[in-house]
Image 1: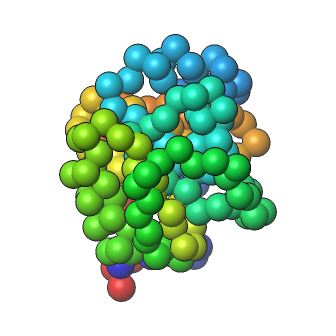
Image 2 (image 1 turned 90 degrees about the horizontal axis):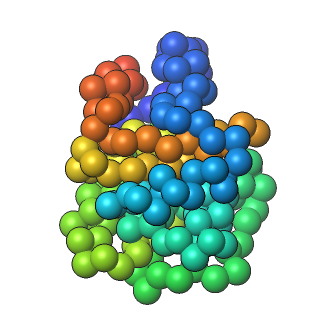
Length: 169
């Protein structure tokens, strides 16, 4: 299990507060890039809700039923496959790593898999970058700024460097 400590990992926290990819202030501006993605992972409830509003379904969606720490219930999740993972805020648990890996194996079928996280999904972007194909598009919300879109291959080294700075428990 990896922990992000507010005191010991200040530099990593500062880095994670910056968008890791291209920031779209308006979700609609990213739709063409999203549609052209061969494999799509979304992290966050608002990102997932925005996608489904436009009838766009990621190969993997990672949610925790919270938007900016407020409860959020998705009206409809159009996925027959819902996986569960435990991941407290500020951590990346072995359970989350394993569940993402399992979803990646299963999602080759072209169906949407949702990982419902008990705790917080924010840091799931990093294992997704590291574990997935370099051509994978990953989307996540940048709080109060917009949508971030990135290609996993562009950030594998950076994501690994950030992960390496976490505290191992």
